[in-house]
Image (cartoon, rainbow, N blue to C red; front, side, top):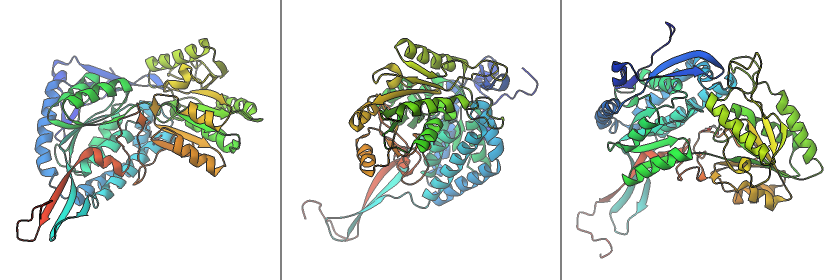
Amino acid sequence: MTETTKIYQNIIGNLEASSSSLESNTQLFEKYNPANKNELLGKFPQSTQEDLEKAVLVAKKAFESWRFTPAPQRAEILYKAAQITIQQKQILAETLTKETGKPIVEALGEIQEVIDTYLFFAGEGRRLYGMTGQSELPNKSIITIRQPIGICGLISAWNFPAAVPSWKVAPALISGNVVILKPSREAPISGYLLIENLIKAGLPEGCANLLFGDGALGQAISEHPEIKVISITGSVEVGKKVYETCGKMLKKCALELGGKNAITALKDANQELLLEGVLWGAFGTAGQRCTSTSRLIIQKSDWSNSFIAKLAESAKKLKVGNGLNKGIQVGPLISESHRKSVHRFVERALAEGGELICGGNILKGENHDQGFFYQPTIIKVKANSELSTQEVFGPVLAVIEVEDFEEAIKVANNTEFGLSLSIYTNDVNRAMQASNQLESGIVYINAPTIGAECGGAAAFGGWKNTGNGTREGGILALDTYTQYKTIYIDYSQKLQRAQID
Ligand code: UN1
C-alpha cells in the first residue's frame, strides 16, 4: 500500500464511520483502475451486520423529522447538491473514468445525468402530485396523497456508479424517505462522493447513509425488517433472490436487471444515421450499459452486406484505451474476470457457427496491456443462438439478418429481456407499428438503444425479466418511494353513510 492510498469509511449519520470490520483490520477490499491495473484507487471496508444495525438506527431517527419536513424544503437540498455537482463536474467525471474506465466525455455525461436527476426531483418537491376525486355524498371530499415509507435500501451497479444511485437517492429523499446506499464493490467511489455532496448541501444527519460491501451486505439490507423499500440495479440472478426476500416480507422492491437490446434496421433506413447509431449504441461505454445495443437486426437488402462491411471498418477504427486520454472512444471492461466472461461468449458464438466480422479478441500491446481492453467485436449469428439472446455486457455486437418487418419484430422480441429496442426506418407507419409491437419498456425510433433522459415522461425500466414493472428516472419513480393515503373529509356536520344514504 502506498502512503497516499485512501481507506474509505462508511458514512453513517453524516459522519465517516469506522466499520467494525476495520477494527479487526482484516476485511478490506481494494479497487483498481480497470484501464491501469496497477493503480490502486482506494481500500474499502467490508461492512458487517453491526455496521448495518448502526446505519438503520441512525436512519430511523432521521426519518422521524425528515418525513415531516415540507417537500419544498427537502427540494432545496437537492438544488444545492445539483449546484455542488455542477461545480465539481470535471473532478467527479475524472474519478468516474478512473473507477469505471469509461471515456471522460461519457463520464461528464453521467455526471450531467446526476445533475438533471437532482433538478428534476427537486422540482417534484413543489408537486408530488396525488389525486382528488368526487364523493358520492354532498359536502364531502376525497383526496389521495403520497407519503414516504421509511428507510430505503439502495443497491447500485458498477456501470453507472453516479447516475444510478442518483436515480434512487433523489426520488427517495424528495418523497421524505431516508436511505442506506450500498455502492457496487467494483465502483464504490462515485457513490461515496454523491452522499458526501448531499451532506455538504445540508442534508440532515442520518438521512443518507452509505455502507461499502459485497453481495452478502446487499442481501442483509434486503432482509432487514426495518428497511421498508429495496431498489436494486444488478443481474437477474441477484434480482430474483432479492425479490424473493422482499416478497416474503411484503416489502416494496424495485428491480432494474439485464437487457438484450437491439437496433432493428429496415431497408428504407437512413444508412449514415444507422451507422453512427450502431457504433455508439454497441461500443459506447464498451457495451457495458444495461441499454447497450447488443444486436443489430438488419433486413436483407441490396445494401445490407456492404453496410455490415462498412460497420466493421468503422468499428476497427474506434480508439480503444484509457478514457482519460484525448480522443479515446472505448474504454476497458470493468475487470479481468468480466473480460474473460465476455471473451467466452465470443468463443462460444464462433464455436456455434457464428461468422466473425471483426474483433473477437483481447487487446494486447503497449497501450493495452495495463488494462482490461477488448476489441470492438461484430459476429453474424443465427436468431436463436446464445449471442443473439443472452446478455454479454461488453463490446460485442450480434448481427442477425432477417427477411422482412414481421421477422425483424419477432427476432427483436426473442429474448427473456425487455429493456430497450430501437427501429430505424423512414416509414412512419412501420415506426409506429414497431413501437406498438416491440416488447420493451423503452423504444427508440431512429436512435440507438442508449441515452435515456431524466424527465417527467421519461421512465426508465423494462419488461419481462428486465424488472418487475417499476420505473426510474422520471415521475413514475415516485411510485417506488411513496405509499398512497386516501383522506375523506366530511364537512356536512352530520353522519353520512356511504352506499346507504
Ligand atoms: C444503465 O446502464 O444501467 O439510457 C443505465 C442510458 C443511460 C443510463 C444507463 N442514461 O443509456
